[in-house]
Amino acid sequence: MALSLDDIRTLFEQHGDLAYSGEPVTQLEHALQSAALAESDGASDELVAAAFLHDLGHLLNLHGATPTERGIDDLHQYFALPFLRPILPAAVLEPIRLHVDAKRCLCAIDETYFGRLSSDSVRSLELQGGIFSKQDADTFLSKPYAEDALRVRRWDDLAKEANRATPDIDHYLRVVGRVMEKQAST
Image 1 (cartoon, rainbow, N blue to C red):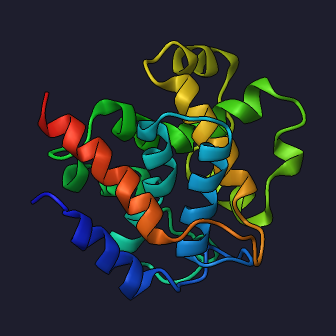
Image 2: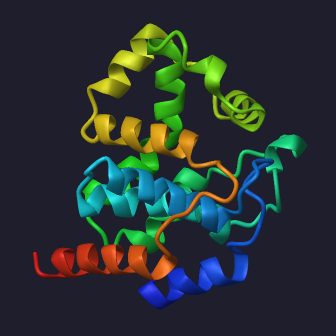
């Protein structure tokens, strides 16, 4: 079953006020901030949509606030894909799918990255398989959309600021809608 724009809106309306894993923002605020950071960096509509939707799996596979404190990896990076695959291109789906592995890669290739992770990101990193080896990082970086996933990951890390002003959900649903229309016409 594919999600519609209305379905995505409803998910955020029903569950967007959940705390974002021990951070000072809600799931909706995190999504809006991620997308706003992507947009301010001049990202394509596809990448802005990926930044906005990258954690939608948390809203589809509810485990409450901060599941990592209970030792749960909800595999959110995969959970939304079957619902989005019929309506969105790989340029959106792959950065979503790869954004967790992007964190694992960044820890391996950027010596300062791990030290900037929030406590919840450190907990989730262990649940998600830990820091990549050099070989795993090289393999990851050779994948299509790996660079886009790294960008989504960096926006994700910065999208945890209480009371940050962003465009509203309608703005980003219009972006997703444009990408959906483009995909439908191909």
